[in-house]
Image (cartoon, rainbow, N blue to C red; front, side, top):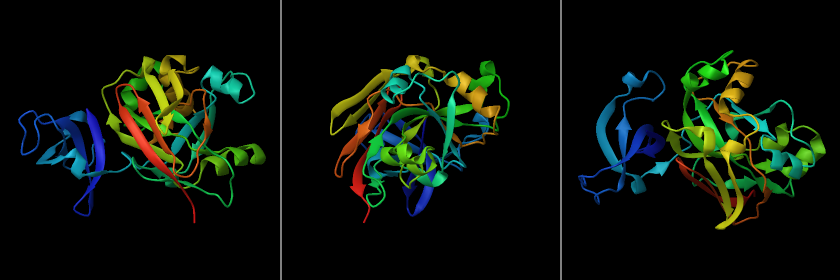
Length: 268
């Protein structure tokens, strides 16, 4: 099931993205959004539909979730750790991105040009927590995951090097695009992940190459902090990172989920 968050009629709503084979006033097979009553977090049998359906092209998709926090993992692909000048870490490297860094599909990524001279893309698989999560063993991690989405862990690379820690470099507004929706029925063990800039492939890898897989990450992070419904965990970026320039169009595509696309602009 693909859960989208969208704006319609001046309100923010949730819906399930599917096709309408009967047409329903639209072209047969066109993607539609079946509106949900309320939010989707909770027991699966509590999800209810309003009966309203909208053609997907008529809607503005928003970030599929507004988390209380975004927990991210650094250097979780060996090739990326080496391109950053080091060896793969023995344990996951945890950092946080503020909730205010979250942006949606088609929202601009804003380069803070007065503060940074290099802003990089980092395509990643993200997971969304579905229930309060604390001290969860790896074998039970799937019980706490609501679904998966695409993410771009945008980073001011020069500030990361200058500060010696990552809060400022990773924390600017718009530096965590998420979307286009949450896929709830997915095995994350071996998915292709690809990042393009202006249609040129810059990153291409598979989640099977994660040093610490999804169950291990959920267990590791939940031993440190409680993850709440809607919280997001970024699993790390593969090698191939690079800079973004004003006017670039950057897309993160993950097998079984879809494509997250954003245009790059400069701050005023």
